[in-house]
Image (cartoon, rainbow, N blue to C red):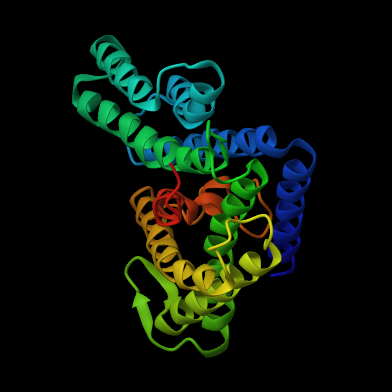
Length: 277
């Protein structure tokens, strides 16, 4: 637990420092790096399950898909849908000569799945922080909205863990994640709502005027519920690969995928709930 707490504090320190000093560009770089490293671990898990995805080119396309909204706003490059379509073409060609006939379908499907489930989902963090012409939200306001999404999702994890350890009795999905309980899930949602309200209160004057603590708490609840689902999806993938953690790069937590798992579904949901263009 001590290593987990230390890693959590250090990760939040990196996030806040990068955003504070490098603002939007720093946030975009962080989101893209998170996407690439998560995709790397996902492809390793899928490879361990015998699906043979294309690792390196998949990661390259993943970076392009994730950063696409920022590139479109800055230099007018095509949107992510074009990058995803191009990736499907490239990998459809590659499976003809680079994969065993028995794994060609699995190789193509797992590679494209990774691009959609990781790169396209985390792209919504980039969409949230990228300023647009005629924007009614300031660049700093967009940064803070992104922090709100990440904080709600991750503190749901923390709340669920602590509540589950303290009073967890009823298992939520024992065949998927034996340690998760319904009590922990409720505690996670409550903590996430509190954090959502707190960030909204601390960000008053920077966030849009309508985004008050009540709205912050109410919107945090569905984001927290989806964060729990997102975490369960990662557990399903790890069970398919017969691994407990996606990696060992983050002491006390596991791999980068174990850090980003709850963000994969909450990033697009947060974007939609916030009503950003």
